[in-house]
Length: 282
Ligand SMILES: C[S@@+](CC[C@H](N)C(=O)[O-])C[C@H]1O[C@@H](n2cnc3c(N)ncnc32)[C@H](O)[C@@H]1O
Image 1 (tube, protein in one colour):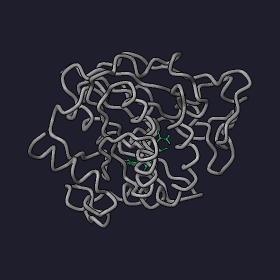
Image 2: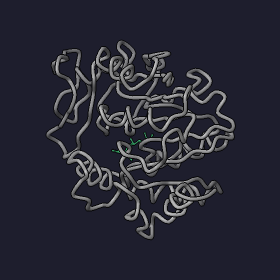
Image 3: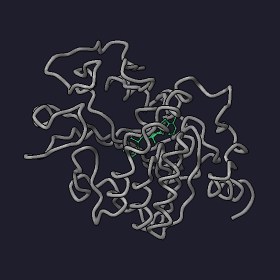
Image 4: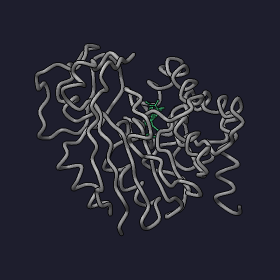
């Protein structure tokens, strides 16, 4: 490995030493960072301790399980034929998806906006004897050259916390022709039915669909992004992707979750999560 990529990798594995300040667009106090990135970094650094246990469970899992219901990989087939692929995980959090990818023979790189989440990821790498680059940064502006990856993936990472008008074109830039994009997010209907409180989604539409984009909640300072399906399809096409599938997840019978924002009863009736699969065609 030579040049810029080697420099990036060397920086990435030294995240604890503050080396990330030398990468473009990733300074913790960078006045150029969009306000939602600054706000989400502070919020996720605060939430990071609550995500350690899930990270540990998922790193140790024998079979990948996706989303809040832990739907098995054998059912969703997200990680098929990844052996030998260069993969970027956008908003990797504790990086268990990257760990699953590494065990399947892929070469993952994880990028995340929260130093605290990456501390957990780094500790779990050491404990599990896996080593892949972890970058502190904003998935809307990734310090890798064009066409560096065969696959981009996000499970509730950049896919809901970054601006879709920025991170989706950035994912397209990072992918080689024919590259795969997969992301798992809240079901759009679940967002429309989400009250502005800690309570679970209701059976009423509480938000407008038209104009749906940036969401802020009274309970914290975080910023999320949710697009209606038509706008998402148009945006993906404009970015150079062809949509291959949109899987709407139904909670399995008897499912439980630690997350208060959706109940198993609701998610038996409506899709609380959705998975988009797209391919870069140009
Ligand atoms: C729910 S975690 C996703 C990781 C993991 N799949 C999970 O579900 O636990 C969300 C992650 O997105 C990260 N994130 C938020 N905004 C981001 C951005 N603009 N760029 C990169 N990562 C971001 C947060 O720091 C957080 O670690």
